[in-house]
Length: 172
Image 1 (cartoon, rainbow, N blue to C red):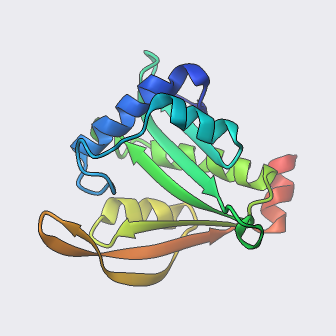
Image 2: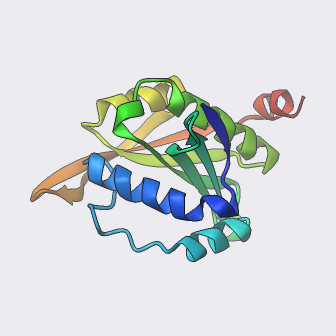
């Protein structure tokens, strides 16, 4: 298993991975078939430097998970990045999430990102446990933030601050 930055040649496999995770999980923002990303547009987002994606590849080379971070677009928000993670159902609980977050945090330190933030459905206990394990804290709850299968769902807003000590360790 290998965690690495996404490459141009991964574009179609990455899009397929996202679509597969959308089908396997009720916890993703997109419902099955709703994702409208095109491989070329995804590559342009990454090439712009405003988005970074790390993928986890299985031993056979197939993509099994990803973490993506989008930097703040305006000057006052460039110190933060919004994070999205997805892992194929068959690979959950195998430490992939921790490895993806380690790669993301190293990138955040290099890019001088001070704040990582994400949202998660409150009943997604496995994800909340992963986020807490990797240093995220719950900042608050967004009531009725999403509507899933006709039911309103609350989301936690979670964040992790990257301090100077972490940057120094990362750069060694």
